[in-house]
Image 1 (cartoon, one colour):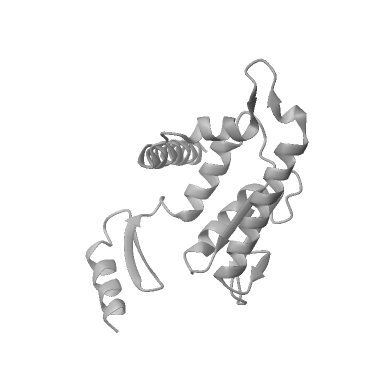
Image 2 (cartoon, rainbow, N blue to C red):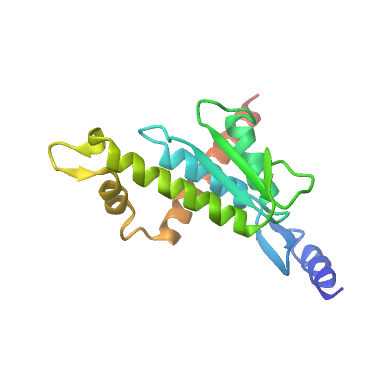
Length: 176
């Protein structure tokens, strides 16, 4: 009952601000309307997919706020997107925007371990995954790319890009 009271109080107090109040499993959050898991996931896929396309995108979640992520990715890339190979999965069988479900978190761990094993086998068995001029494997390239990445800087980049996109959309609507 306390979480509901906090949510109601925050919603009332922040109604004049561009803020939304959400509840999830054991928490209440207040954040900018434009910033949510869906916006960040779509931005992340967009940034990671440039300039080379991604092999696939796997997105899993077990919370009501994860539904924003599934819906946003499906909205941006299509629910049956073959070009991107988008796999959305909810943890636990329940109504969801996700295309599939797994039983619990141990199934997610097993799935991720399978991805890792498959990637290791692919890198080890295909000599073309080595960059000839510098003799670095694909794994080395991934490590090099993500070493020292500042997550808060990434979130700022995504947030700023999202704000610019929304501002362009608003200007376009105002000009009509």
